[in-house]
View (tube, rainbow, N blue to C red):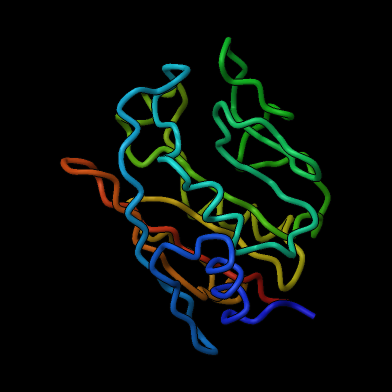
Length: 192
């Protein structure tokens, strides 16, 4: 049986008891994360996650068994995790190099995906990749996600999705220092 949204909020609070709690009811999980800025990037890679972002996100999904990190950049795969990016460089070494519109996985194989795509054409240029179609990526992630599985999508816009495939179950405002873009972690559940 899948965790309730309140149980996910509780799991977050157990991991981060000193931070403001997440709010949840039967239909929606929400929060505001103030993460602070990483002024000095250890590896110099453009667009690294803000401090503690990954740990906070994964704490909401302690029940995940098979995780996919799309647009993984320099993120290393952990146990039962697959990283996917469109290229290999000195810094970017994904588990799989693939086009996110046509992933090399069978249907319904992942129960959790974290996606952090380029937010704009300028960002895509900085990553040396083409800008993606959010709508097409959402459809492809729906194909490889088990019913009841989740997608956490970090972006400056809410991605377009098909209501027959996804139900949005939450959102977290992600604030990082001053003079930076405000992002939203949109949380979706795969319908089945």
